[in-house]
Image (tube, rainbow, N blue to C red; front, side, top):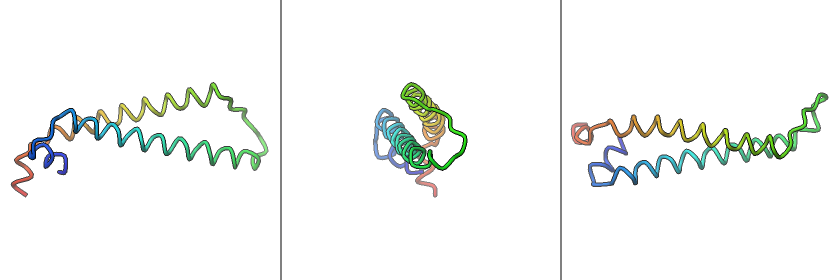
Length: 90
């Protein structure tokens, strides 16, 4: 509903898309950073170890970014389908 309100107030579609994409990538980066930090601390606690090098971490970062972009595209499509007049009705 907030996005429909922004559209009703005259926000451009580009601004709305940028806002959603930025939030999605920020959440993905925070989650990736926390996972790497927790993984490096907890690495010594496990008896079987899998070596994860910088190449794997870089690939994982790219994968997280792709997933965040695809998920935000789904959210953007859904958010832009809400008619701005719906905000006025409820």
